[in-house]
Amino acid sequence: MNFLRIVALPALALACTVAVAQDARERGFIRKGMHEGEVMYRIGKPDHEAVVSDVKGKPEEKAWTYYPHSRDPQTLTIITLRAGVVAEIERKVSR
Image (cartoon, rainbow, N blue to C red; front, side):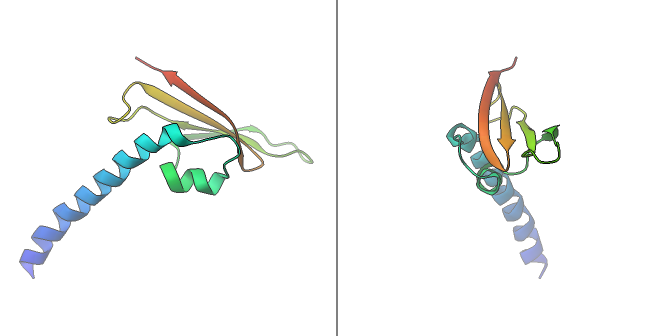
């Protein structure tokens, strides 16, 4: 039983690291017209979320920010969603 615990924890940690690394590379494949759920599935939750506009009778607009990652160390990605669909993608080089 102890052997299983000793092996399982590092294996789980490695699997999580690989998943996060994959998400960082996927950021470049996000396109206009993708749905919010698909973006979340491909690259995960944003590091920061801001509501840009939430006026009654108009579609909600929000901005998701993904900070630089070790697999994409100089790129800040900002995705603007209107009514749950990607409207704009901005990739900025940050140093």
